[in-house]
Length: 295
Image (cartoon, rainbow, N blue to C red; front, side):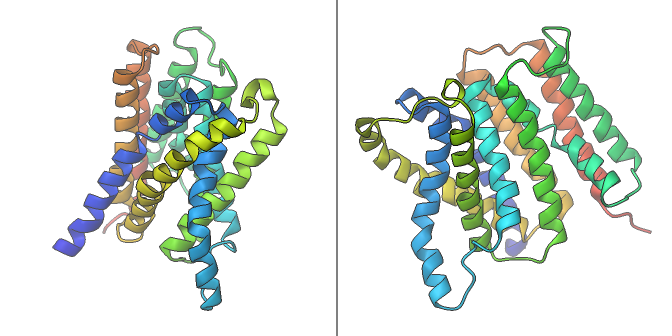
């Protein structure tokens, strides 16, 4: 019983903490790191912290995680896009648009896996699209992204859905490999965004004084938050069935959107409440539609 309970507790705690990921992002931005450089820092520093352990594993004949490139690029890249969106649009909007993921998951399974769409998955698709239309068009009447942050949030959810599909279809790798590849390739995507997108969006590179002040806090965030939270999520995912895991991961959306509503002065009214309810409902329906049928 204890063995079954431990992964549940770990995933609930890690998912709830991940819902607060936007807080350190905003804090580092307020301390002088521009949007693009904040995302790069919070992903690259954990990769650097884990790098000696990856090298040690390689010396022992174990995979370090760098070979897990596709999964790392998709999962880490999705979070890099999401982190940028949190800094470039309202937090609640970024969260809600990211959690439209069930829409993209359902479409991918229909097109790529050729799976028949169940009633539950159809409901997830309808609720997710309704949430998408609500949050994008609720205040303007036109269901289109209002800024680049909205666009990146939408894209992050789609990339995350691709990553989830890829991980489910590939052989298992251990937790360290997944965690290291997540931060390694996520920081690579963040670096590409800094280099490709204009400074007007990503912001100018920080000066030495700002970096010197923030390095201890970035290392602390990596050791005390980023690495443990991601480790807990990925470890717990290996010990829970997909249906239960999907339900528990909804804590991310609940905590993230709820904390943004309470802790920021950004707009959060009927439109955001309705969009949140629809998107979380889509996530629950997506889980129910993914469970295997019993005879």
